[in-house]
Length: 571
Image (cartoon, helix red, strand yellow):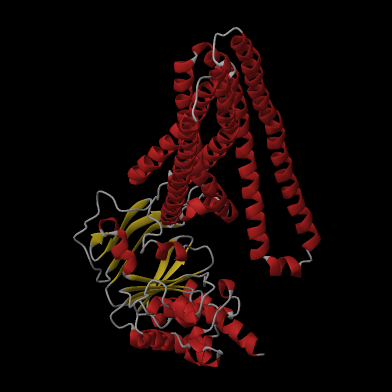
């Protein structure tokens, strides 16, 4: 709002203009009636008519620009808020997303944000309009007859008490409604994301019943809000009616006694419709404010979340590039709530331009280890060094720009293959994209697609096989020309022959790139310069392929198991 303070000021000026003209109209009517009671001329009456038409026209102009400025301003703020929220969400760690469901975040980024926009646009406008109109009307009325003015405003304490009471109930009820909406959004998101599994397990009726219950809860809470407002709005109208009765009765009696003129009486009668909107509008304002503040609390909850990994006091912004030396010094990592560390006192060194394979059974800590390099997580103990400097000293943007990461779970956007490969490297030339596709051994598959690289892959890459998704992700990492390449089981969805072709091509392309390759296959690990074997979070073996086979330990057992699996697959 501070960013748009001058536009708010312009909108408030037009609002004051509009309210001033609204207060002027009944005053002109009262003066015109008193003029009719005395000696009058047609010309003089014409001036009053012109004054009324002019005031009405000026009021219309003020109302138009008031709404145009303040309502469009709220859309600009909504635009900024949505960008700020999106930029903030991508900085938050995995632990945050483990605590919030996708549908809940979607509801906050859409429905709640729209309510905040209403708060900062119509909410600010109507609140200010009611306040300014009351003040303007009160000044004119009090200057004319303060007794009738007090009579008209006598119900105001009751209006304030009612607004406070029903406002609190609205706030609490709307928070429940937004939580129900989040539950519905999360349910729909999960349903659509897992539609194939639900069909395969015949869970359609059960899922429909589950959604019906969520919808019933949402309907019930909305009806609860309606029950609150079915009392509040008639109560406000009743209080307005009391003001009408008071003015008609007491004002008419004072006219008969000659205490006020007929023009003054008619002016007060004309002011009542002007005051009716603020008093009834107070209900709308309370509704908007309570909805908006409830939603603002939910958005603030997200914006107050802070990334656990970010640049800090230790960051050296003079570092603008990464060479690729990697070293771990007695690193221990333990996830929150876990009984045992995922990594225990792990130390290793990978010189720039060399390759390291990390093998081990499921849950041995392989992915945890490689996640330390781009600082997707930080160790609880020990240090991660990049080019001999603590990784915390390297600006996060510089470090991650130097890393190409192919994770276990490949995610593709519902765009073309070319767009997915260019993610993070939009400026890449077409020949660079094609070179990365070839290095990932993906060019034959691409040539078979109807539109080749321009082929749309569908939501989450549904039109591609698992192996094609992984090779798309690999090309995406390679096109960035990273100094450090991390392959986290990146060939798990391809056969061993394709895997061999991919890794052979990568060796030729990545001579100056530090490569960390996680694999449960020994056939992939043998391509690396060095291999480490993890077991229960510790490095239990290290060496070349031949050296580890000669040890006759865990690596050899993994090797023998893979040979048996391949033999069984052939038969």
